[in-house]
Length: 81
View 1: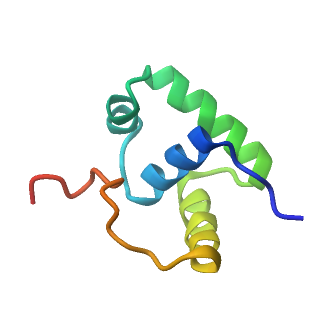
View 2: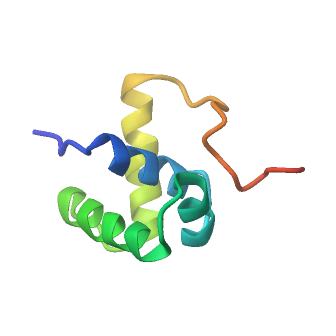
View 3: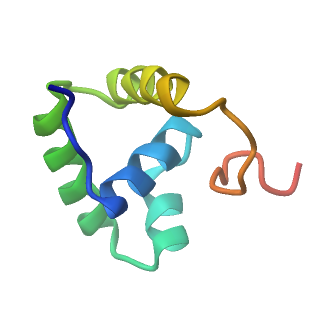
């Protein structure tokens, strides 16, 4: 059975996958950076990973199962490019 992320955890995971820093994620979601870190600890526990890279790779596999990767405005890493 695949782990289920909450809607907020999914937002955090997507933003990590899009190569955003914790500070950028916090700004995008209007939360404190410590809240982002707390979400990441929970996500890591649910999916059994220990790093942002592992999370990003897991998320890449998950979105490949449900829809094609697309620029849906959720990534902030290339903003202003």
